[in-house]
Amino acid sequence: MSSFDYPILSRSDIISILAESQIAAVTDNDFKNIKPDFVSNLYTRLLIYLDALNEEDQGQVEFSALEQIENPDLLIGSFQVMNLYCRLREVMASLNCPMQFNLRDLIKPDPRRTEHFLSGILNFCLYKETKMNLLRPIVEELALLDDQRKEWEAKISQLNEEIAGYSEARERELPLVQEIESKVKELREMIAGLNSNQMSLRTSFRNLKEKTGQMDEKISKAEFDLVQSVQENANLRSKIVQSPDKLQRALEEKKLARDEAKYAERSAMQSFQEKTATVEVYSKALKKMSKHFALMQAIHEQVNSAKSVEKECKGLKAKLSDDVVLDKSLEAKLIERQGKVVQLEEHKRQLQKERDLKFEESTKHLNSVKSEVLSKRCELEARQKKVEDVVAEVDSITLKTSMVRESGAAKVQQLISKCEEIVKQFQQYSSSIGLLLPVDGNGTKTTFD
Image (tube, rainbow, N blue to C red; front, side, top):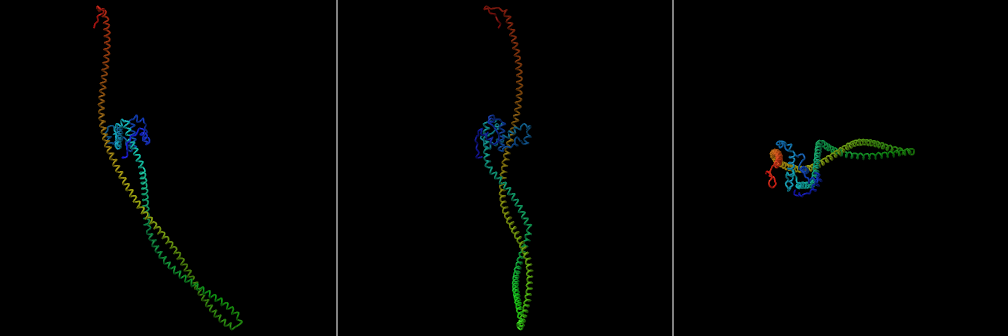
């Protein structure tokens, strides 16, 4: 209120401000021919505009006060006037009005004083409106912050529910994870054993390949020797006719060569059978290795799935840690907002206490004024009765005086008529006697005084 000033507004400014604020539609004629009802209605609208008076509170009195009054229905108007008077007096006192507002300003208003009081109230309305326009962005920001606080609280509750769900799922899936981890360890050990077995099988397979290569070389060599022996046999047959001795020696040599070829063939067949046996062994080993390889692939897929589960678990743990950090930050913000709410509630309590104190003071003042009004009303009623008695006496006296006056006027009229008759009779008598009276020396008749 330090920056609130108190300029006196002109009548046109008052009318324009009332119209712009949509408080009341008034004209210049209303201020020229000012009436108590117009002033009371205008003051009531201004107090309602300033939130200093509620429409429901007009004319309402406590039941304890109504019980002390014989005919409360007859005093409703006076209650409304006194309530409005008390509120206006409080408002004028709070506005530091240089003029003192009294009851005469409501019952018999003066245009100059009314314009003075309206100037003060309207200046305060303009001052309040400017201050409210300055505070409106702050109030809107507070409303937005309140909405954001509610949204964050909802998000916090939702995140808490999700965290509880994740923790419950983690507790439920913990034995399964432990079982999978044990299986993963077993599979890793099995994979290590199978890898070592695979390496040994690969080395044995290389050795068998080398042996089969050697056997193939021997078989090819034996076949080559057989072909040569066949060629030599054909040559020998062509030479049988030429030299029998040489032929005999050649036959013996050929027999020896044939025996060696047969021995070589037997050894080749044995080596071939050994190779077929080794090939069968290799095929069986290959089948076993393929089975082991398929099993290793399945184990590898299980290991990959276990690794993906571990990655998902790590991701969930990271998300859980992020949620915990976000939850802590939101809890800090919530604590800060709760502190602001507590401060606002304390400020609200203080304002309510001040309002209650002002209301108690106003009710006490109103009760005292009501008691004074009632006592003055009783005195006025007693005076009114005395005045009525005096008026009745005066009326009876005036009636009596009018009756006496009328009777006196009638008597005077009768006396006047009698006097006129006496005068007429005297004139007649004097005229009749004048004929009989003597005349004096001057020639005049003597008259009776």
